[in-house]
Image (cartoon, rainbow, N blue to C red; front, side):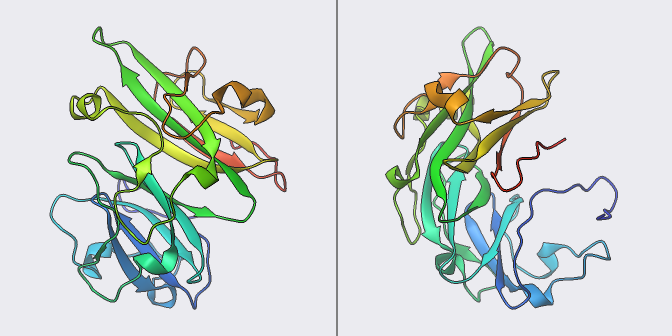
Length: 239
């Protein structure tokens, strides 16, 4: 098991090879590249990324990706925008990083998702709060080929969040997940509900087109939501 310093905890992880390039993404949309073989061993507690790269003040590191130059990722942000890109587009040799995703003011990048050839759908969930303070979480599932493939940029809307609502912090996208046709979706929930695993057939009412509003999640799913694909090859629900 991994060990951590103080209150540190696992933010995100990616699986790859020692001879590949690791790309770290900060909350402002910048990408920082480091050779995988140069990273510290998992036997220790790691080392601060800020000792290896030059990040802007106030940003946080949100995720990591690794793979070949042809590997594809889905990158998105809390304002509801996203796009697909080859990992090679995010790689640079600059310590100060490369501006990969253009994020709207106040938005934060969501951890990147490694895309494989079996992925056919994208699931996205967002939080919506009405003027009385009632929170309802919604989810939308749409075909992955409705997303643009870009070298970098702002991307397109995954789910419909108005600029006004996002600026007022009454709506924001929480998480995104890619799914194969035979995958299941585990919805982690921080509240009493805990979480549940669903098949795509059970989620048919959430399947529509990109940039729609989605449908409200069942009663009890009004806290922080994290989406996780359960591939058919494993089909073991997370704890």
